[in-house]
Image 1 (cartoon, rainbow, N blue to C red):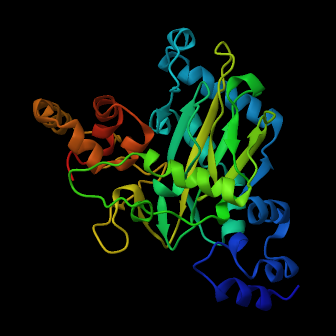
Image 2: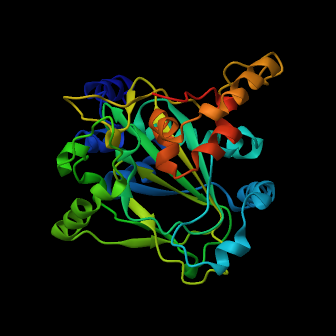
Length: 345
């Protein structure tokens, strides 16, 4: 293989992920994807790829994560309820090293680095004990990059997933649909408005029908993981048996040398843009002392301001918290103070 030719190819269209490039056939021919050809081909064709992380390795990791988070969820109440909402914890990597370790797994990072052509970094973890039953959606309305496409999710089962537990839903090929901005569906974001994801639902469903795209479920074996590209439509199927758990971890990744923003809260490209400054998983906490903890005086100062805390402004300043559906008070106490989050825009 001619390394010079490969380098020239990968540098011709630097603002397009390699697997999504119109030069993809030539990149394949010149070995640009190394040992990850199958992953690149799956992402190119369907917008997602199944990778093997090793059953034995993942068995120990999964057990450690489930044990660490077991007391964080009221599973019995959820099982007896009829709520369509699932249970989740965002950014539990802050308190649990094993979750951080999985998010920064060298094998995952190497695969992403190779198929995207840029250096990846994890910016968010979500841990689930049960099925989400989420509507089909594209992550790109919540987490977008400029240039487009340099974002992905990695979904890792932490147990064998049963078909009745609400498996992951996805629409292969939907990554080729247009990236949607709020204005594309007739919504113009204003300072006093906070649109929800459902403003996009009719358009997504209509495009699926018009393009005759299939809908599939993913019931993986322990040791597998699923990479989905930024615009892939995915969600959670119905939980038919609420006695069954569906432990999993999702890590969202951005890539270096991009700008990041939240389209659902933006008037791209002509109005106000909700730019993001994502904190990297593993990055030290801000405003900490040498031991990595918030100085006592700062903590007391922040806590003394709680009487003036405005949850609406907090969510506006932290759109990732709103997108995850987390109670702003809970997020502030558990994570926001530690992270030095802004309390208002």
